[in-house]
Image 1 (cartoon, rainbow, N blue to C red):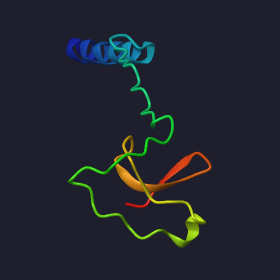
Image 2 (cartoon, one colour):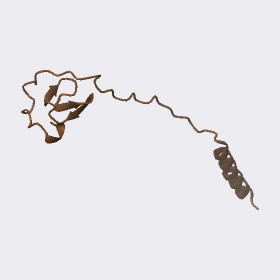
Image 3 (tube, rainbow, N blue to C red):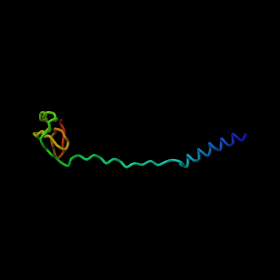
Image 4 (tube, rainbow, N blue to C red):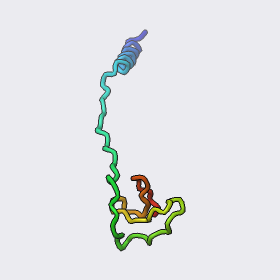
Length: 87
């Protein structure tokens, strides 16, 4: 074998060994984004001027009133402590 083949095979073998050992690999890490939290509870108020008109009360709401919620910025119905937007 010629000297150039020996040097080339040694370089390839060394590179593969370094890759297998994880040399030169950087560890990337980032803090995860905190999950968005919904408003704690109903905060009904008067709708702003840009709000769409109040929709028709849904039949599935069982008589619950359609309200504008300041926290969610939507028309919706509060049922069992959960805000269901109806836009």
